[in-house]
Length: 556
Image 1: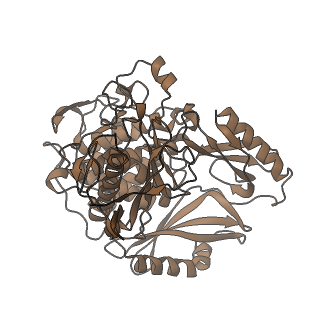
Image 2 (image 1 turned 90 degrees about the horizontal axis):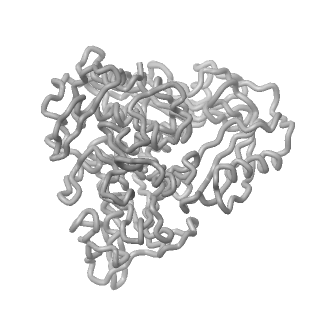
Image 3 (image 1 turned 45 degrees about the horizontal axis):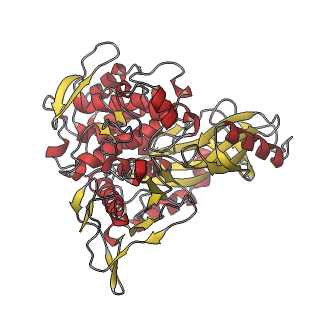
């Protein structure tokens, strides 16, 4: 597997893994419902500060959210004018978050002369009275090009994109349709083509490689991978309650209490365009805890989706991945001995392989949470899956995947700061990733350094994962939930944790309120400081802990 194009739960190929001495492995998407006692963090967590009223997001019903989006759309022209955008620019509303005090944070995409502006997204913040509270932009550059007539034909961009996909190691790559865009995510805005090349990555994960080509010179400007990899008895979770409904004389695996989430059986097909078959059962008792029957993996996937939904709604106040009350769906038994899992925006679904020998399905709680959280990121900040923003994208899924695991309080899979410890993708019982010291897997980064964005997002995510662990639990050696951790800092500083619950809420608010598609590590620091200030105040222990934790991973 070429790490440049991998975006499933694991960024390590079997070949690369065999060449590298690992203390552990690599992972993909998530979240969890944490009771007060379960989210308190380490015993030496920093003293709580009073939360300024109203800074937390409220859960919006689908109708209220739709009305807020409609209102934002109706005033998009005046909003663009107030921001000083050019005459050829328009705003298209994409998402809205509302705080308890009435403050709204409206996320827009941008167009220029009718063309999509990639990397032109922005977030407008307004008080309940309508007063401006600032704007966060993916780029500060003026969106302007000499003209919108391309010097090269779309077919030229398509051929270039196909070559890029083959160079990335994709198989069965087929040229896609090139659409004209304005590329503004890096450097000076330029007229460009975006081509999506579909195919298959080296490990069997479907590929949807987005290639950005300069429309005048034909030069490749950027590329990123869009497929982000990542009562019944389950193999990982034991006996659990799963949502089902009566369907004729049988029962259907459908969770009507959580947006209608369904789990489907792909029956080892490699065709990722298929939804799969419905799971039906005569007596509403699903799975046997062993991989010998297809229902077992379905139980784990279905339960993982339920816990993730509950965590989002009950802890973070979000009504589903997109905030619209509608569920994604899950597919199990993809491929043959496929050792990965992935999220795909196009189907709005999670897909799981069965692992080595089709006996180790990648359907553990933290993996389920990780995969669904890729959908959360896509619906909010839409962090580009390349460079430092790609690392932040992966880390967001690890953070909320871990949070879901803690929230669920499942005795068969208790919460920890280890990613993918149940799926044994390394074959030796070690986890994919470690949040307290990411470099223990032999590939991930503990600290930021110049050029880090050139590596695989699965490994550069270590910086944000390490930051989150330090913020939640603090530095040094400690035992949490029976697991021993020992988290270092770059300069030897001591970091005092504020507890998991607060750390999660700070990251969520930063993601949904302040981060954009081009956010890098320096901007992530700014975003989380803004979030801590809004939630707890600029002089709070929480704000100071965020600053200190970023310093601990060399982001200053």
